[in-house]
Length: 117
Image (tube, rainbow, N blue to C red; front, side, top):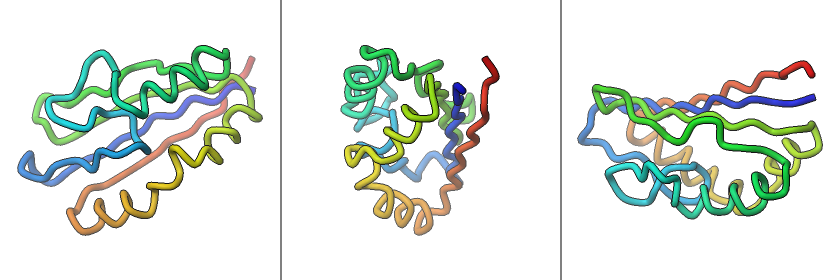
């Protein structure tokens, strides 16, 4: 079974920066890097895309009003999805990012759906 994730961050104003460490596929500075060259994107490409485990379906994109950051990824099996969910490169920063988002009123959502083969 394949999985598609749509990951979204919505901030209250453009004065509030997004948290930008390893756990999300945005670059570490603004503006967003359209090439996906952030450390997280590089890690994803090396360990997931280049090995056939997954792919970035859409690079991080910022809404016209600058408030919502969205990207989509796909994982080619339950095993590969579980692997990234356990990858410390991405998971170690989750508590810090969630705290940042709470303190700055940033809404984070991850919608994961199964894609029938």
